[in-house]
Image 1 (cartoon, one colour):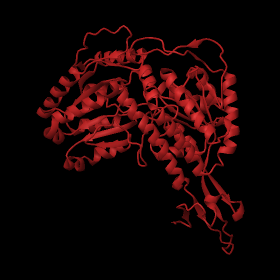
Image 2 (tube, one colour; image 1 turned 90 degrees about the vertical axis):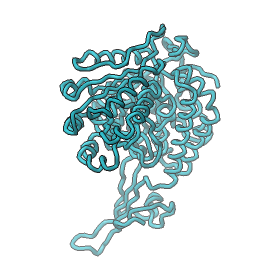
Image 3 (cartoon, helix red, strand yellow; image 1 turned 90 degrees about the horizontal axis):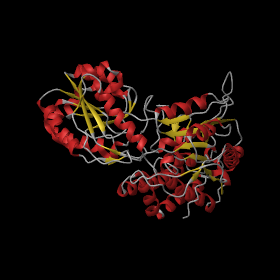
Image 4 (cartoon, helix red, strand yellow; image 1 turned 30 degrees about the vertical axis):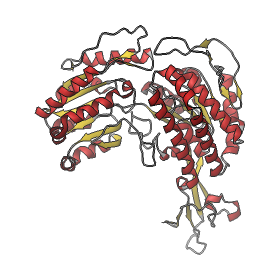
Length: 526
């Protein structure tokens, strides 16, 4: 596969204009070829125009045909896996086993959406039969289901070059819904993005898709990204990244003459609450599991547990002793970029400068000319200090966590009530403690999209029931998820047909039910 360093627009490529940017290896600092040319505003307009033309045809494709496209994309990515993984490793420093797992996850979610749209339940087809004899006013025949919104702008994440990138969950769910996709790839893995983009382009051609079904537009978010969001033919946005980036896209979308939805996943500190009975039973085991979760992928997960709340006592002392040892012995890891690593180090120091916060680990002296190597950091404070400094609730993106020692359940409840919206919240407890802590569970239900019991939040299973979302500011819309089959609902809207003749109705709403769908008919599921 030959990389050209050019944006993909429909079946073609953008022109080489302006200066080019070379990717840089976070491992060696070496420049990687080829250099990448940014798309122009004309390219954005061309891609959006093609996407709208494609939408008018693609929205009418039957589910089986869209499913075949999704499966073909998965097959091509799977076949090219080793080549894609090697390039992703060079661009991100993520280890090959992690990238192999991410490839499998990417292909799995493409195929999961294929089976979902074939099943048809997500259409939520509803029929209320009319009654011309009802008095004083006849009841109309009313039928509804979900239809696609239109072209979707997808923004790749930095930390998942495959699963939350060009052919990741946002792209898979948008295509499954019947929406063309315009991807703004992340600048941290441009070569990987081009490889996957070419395979999506190939699959689209092989499956006879209209030309504008997929485009890939390189460029900075403040220019190309904002232009995509503001383009009048783009109808929704999927984003995974920082709160700053998500807010800027939301503001751009809201300022349009026709505002559009932005589904932004913007990170989380993922609080962990350790109750006394669990610590008494397995303090060292919890410390080991927590260490693995915090340092997984050099802490570069949106589900990394950045806050831990414990009640002071002997079991907590054992827990902290084990955790300090494990964190101190963790070898430095290479982060995705030097900028992220610098921000991580500054975040740790910012916390450590707060009066009453202790840094329990010391940074290992290391040779780091590229500035991408990060040491694990463990910090500790008291509940009274934590409640006085809102800055301690901020996310540190990297292998760090802050342990907050509480004097009782009252402290934990006070802290939980102050937390912002989260992707996850975790409780370690005995079953009896969990039952007794219903007040804490009920409070966390208002704060997070996923509650974890006796586990750790890293590792998001791709399945029908998964929710990877949460109240603001974890996401821009806490009613949605970016992982799992509910993700398709972000890119559809309900459409109702009243008193339409049978021959003019979509198959999903016809009386004979030719698609064999599960439907709500006169208030009963059939």
